[in-house]
Image (cartoon, one colour):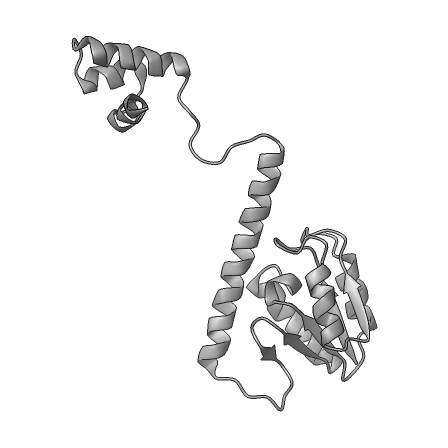
Length: 180
């Protein structure tokens, strides 16, 4: 039996695209997480408990299923113990024993998976930070220091080293503010 597993990911927060894929792939059952967090993945836990021999677990991509290479390996071991297979649509991976893959293909897919996993976590963290009003990157210098640095520069009484020493504003930062 084909069983789909989905969880919210960047670009498919409501899992609609994943559910549509499972319909196209004729999945008899679908398990969908209500959140994207790697913690408390109740639907995955429930799915793994209900898997039977010869079931095929279908996912849109490896990073939907697992959060790290180690987690993926643990899940693959569990599927093998239960006599089940995994099919990942994006990577076109099918763990059916009758299928053969080159070692290079497997390594490439694992590297891509790891990159996707890190990227997804980073994007999710940035989204949460933006919602909280936080900004990514280096913090801005206080406006008073910038104003003082510009005044010192325009007075032509100070060199750039002195301006930096007194205000903490670097040459590149000063020039960036002067351009604006």
